[in-house]
Each structure stands twice: as structure tokens, then as C-alpha cells.
Image 1 (tube, rainbow, N blue to C red):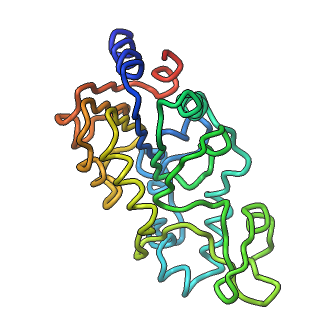
Image 2 (image 1 turned 120 degrees about the vertical axis):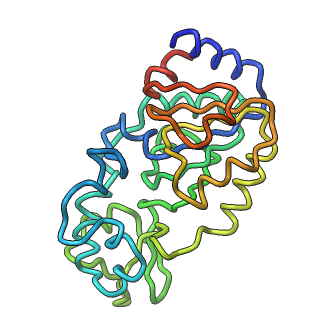
Length: 238
């Protein structure tokens, strides 16, 4: 495994246009639970299945129940970035990493210092009134009682892509452009089973594709290097 990490380190040193594509596994080492592992949110018992709670229809029809789950399970304000987040910010500062494309909604990449972050599924840090579109931060929403309301009386909705909602076209376009121009693409902490996000890997035209995940993914055969190890160990070794 140490040999693979050394190969990974060399690939980074040889590359000048790196894009990182990450999923929930990037933040699990910060203490944030993922969705699909045996201890993940989707395998816990609730009155409604989490996939149903996190849908647009459920938000509109059962807003109070949505917010009970949302505040209980998706509050990332108390978590701190880990070694992977910090190493990526460091690579960006050196001019090597051009973009982070993330499926996560926790804002930890920015907290670690990353500047160019394309959040495919939005962020819990941004929230908007559905009536007047006024902005509210994450703290306001997570500290509110019941359904968070704007001063105009409108319901505040997180800027998070729920099931049944489409991805933001600008973010998608920027992500595709960054991936298609990269010479090294690092895919980490994702099972690559959630579409359309996982389909972005097909836009990569560069020299080296690296997949880092504890378990195998449907795209392993496309990669130049596959590392089945914790991200903390891998990024701690570069």
C-alpha cells in the first residue's frame, strides 16, 4: 500500500492541472456520517426512509418533519476539516489543484481554505427564503425552532439539492470544464453510484485517473491507480 501512495505522490508532483472529485467518504474522518455504508444514514431507522425525507415532495408536504431530520442529521457546523481537506487546499495554493468538485454539502473544503469548490449538491451553509429570496446562514437555520421562517413570513429552504431536484447548471458546466481540462483526476471517498454526479468522470480526458476508496467502484477498471485505503492515510502520506 505504501508503494501505491508513493506512486500517487509522484503523479501529483508531475501534474499541474489536478481536479479532485469527492464524496461522503472525504468527510467521514471529520466525524460526519456517510449515507450508504452499513452505519450510514440510509441504514438507520426513522419514521420515514431518509431518501423520502430528503425529497422535494416531502419538504413541501411535511416541512416540519423534514427539518427535524435535517437539523438532527445534517448539521455540519460543529465539524472541522481533516487532513484530506487541508492537503487539497495546500495543493490549490501551490497552483497544482485547479478545482474541487464535491458531492458533499458540509462546507468543509472552504473551511480548510479551498477557493475553487463546485458543490454539486449545494451547501447547508446557504439558505434562502422561498418567498423573498433573502439569504440566511446555516447557524440561523440550525438554531431556529421548528420550521425556520424569514422576517417576511416565508419558509426558509436550504440551498441543498433534494431528490427530484436538478443540479445547478452553472456548477455542472464548471465541473465538466474543469474535469475535461485536467491532466490528473483524483476521485476519492465515493462509491460512484449516484447519478448524474458520478457520470462526470466520463468527461475526463487527461493522462492519469486515481481512485481512492475503501471499497471497489464501478469505475476501477478505468483508473491508472486504485487505492483501497483510508483517505487520511493516503493524503497524510503525500
